[in-house]
Image 1 (cartoon, rainbow, N blue to C red):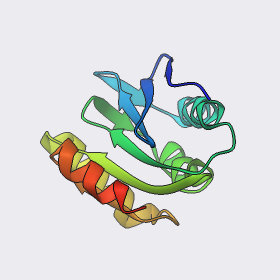
Image 2 (cartoon, rainbow, N blue to C red):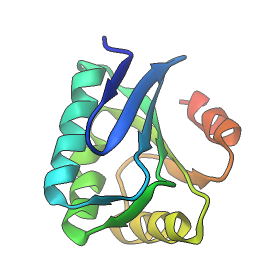
Image 3 (cartoon, rainbow, N blue to C red):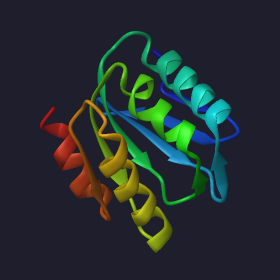
Image 4 (cartoon, rainbow, N blue to C red):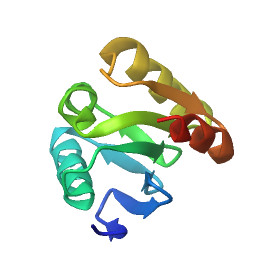
Length: 123
């Protein structure tokens, strides 16, 4: 299994049984980007279900079709997801995504990476 990967949208790192995805600063995510993000995540996981930490502080915008794709197909092989938020933008994106798309996996938003990892370690 790979332990590091990077594409135009994010950096992926596997450490201590948690897959961390840190989105690049100022990134806009449309449907095609969401498909690529999920494809690369699945490549990293190689069929293994893992908890995922998503640092979305760099996301500038995510459109409706991308949100829908990430909530459904993007949840494949994920045990649980924790979102790292900071700015009002990432907090609004996270809250809106979780409220409207209702991913089929346990998920929560955090401002602290340590709290997020603690949540994910229970899975």
